[in-house]
Image (cartoon, rainbow, N blue to C red; front, top):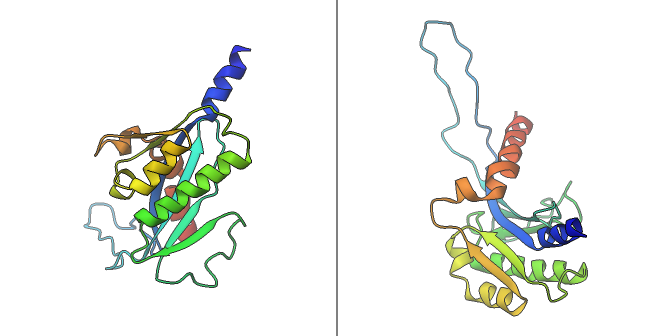
Length: 181
């Protein structure tokens, strides 16, 4: 019985974070002659950033991801190859905004409700202190109303303390670079 209780508690511990990816490959190796100077030539621009917003709990259950591309309107081809449940959005610079994070909050509450996880048990959502998260009254009120407690990691520590940064996003970035070659 004890293991079931721990599993139930793990179902209520969530982490949300976002990571950006550029559409221009970053060279990770240089070919040269030993003992002679080598130069790594890369593009002068970083490319356009797309952001992936991911939310997962302690046992690996994941909410539908949100992918944010740079633009004013969502392009027709932007969902090609993506799972049906992926939310594709646009922002002026390809980064998360307060409005998009509030949309995520609605999706998160709907996800918990449709899976029967909103049965009076409180949830804990761990996130970084980004302005679109922490200074977002609509999002915070929505979480409070639905018995979801928000814990914001201290500024400049999330790259060490954020579970998604430490494992999932590191693997994602390595895979992204391999796919871009």
